[in-house]
Length: 610
Image: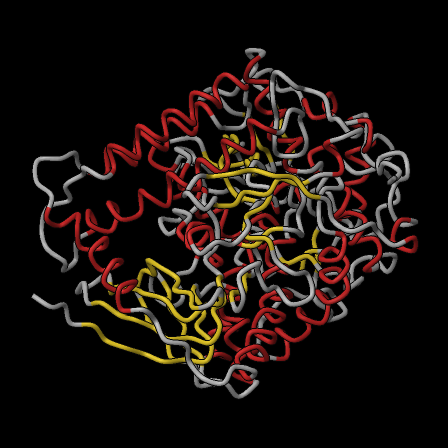
């Protein structure tokens, strides 16, 4: 029986409806081209809404000493100098304008007493830099972008999964998707495609990611032949909920620490003073008195002149410190640490952190104005992704652009909190602008080979005809547990080699799974189709982690605990598909940084380039 296929044509197809996708779609639509947006869940449900703390931009509203130069320095330093300095410069320079633009479009940010956009402290940022709306910043960002976007004429396809990006003569020609509700099949012809599909953290058992984060966007780019970069760097946010088990991994915003929350072990000790790296020694307090004095100044509305509390170190440092306290037998009751903000006025806590107050009250029966929260590391963000041109966001595949978490470059070995939301709107705009320009230069739509369409349809429907196999949910569960145990926050060569072998076993199991049922409302079918992407993305991470024989940022090798700047400090990993379908790894360096920007960085930490 010949399958019924619905055909669509758009100058620009945007895959993903989070902050990056919406901002790209808005920019492309304003350029006068036709835009189709495909999203895996409902519009308004993108993972961006879960971002709580704020968007980093050097507005200098809370501290006039802030500047794009300081933001650039913090981003490069936080990323352990492995980021693309060109993207870090663009981001730092353009983020303030993107925040002001959101305000013009109706975003309701919290305000200072003088009526300016309020900004809060966050780990790794020298000054209060995060524009926020309580602890629901991502939700307001999405609300604003959607309200702006729906008036720009884009067409939205909700609850669709994209299975394949088509190419013709080395350039994108469109994509194939199916409707998750009724199983109908759709082919989209496109002159350009913008990938804005977010992250991959559902590949780990304990994660803060929503159900969409199975890594399909990363896999789509890889399958299309795009170069992938820095996939070993997966950030474990230090503070996820760990009790009760039903909520394990749900994020506890860094804003809690930004508002004065302190971390303690089971003995009641503030342990972060013992984990300040040498590179940050001058910036962070080494005594409780000094840290408390800083907090009192900030809470009192004054400019802090003292060194910051160590709870505001970068996420990789804090996550590993909690992990070390656990290994030393000083963990909290359920294996994490205590995060306490109960010392602050209860009404202030409820005003500044309303989401956190209700989250713990409803899910854990904890009143955070009176009791400490119990937290632990949770897989949160991937710094790696599709390699892009810093000025256009185009990938190594012609006509394929990427922005947001699916792209790599800005964050290096570790992302600073708050840089993700400003990343979305800065590079989402750039991707949409250049995708529209690219589409206007094309003579027309490229043809999509019917055999390519037939092949992906057969692959997509094939699981429905299988009988007697495993439940796909069991394979996904085993994959997530394995990645947590063998490619998690602390890694060794032996465990990573085991992980790579285990992934091939899981791949073999995945092609035999039987979801049962038909095409209509069948989550088992969707999951059976996701496993291939999860295996490939997990393998990228494991291979890159095995090859990087040092510890840097979010990547920690127990068998190579030191940071090796003599060699590894200059090179980034690149994953690409071989002609025979094999997964290959190579290493490259970004262009030499300009002398002007080098003066903004710590010469002791940044190795002299040859």
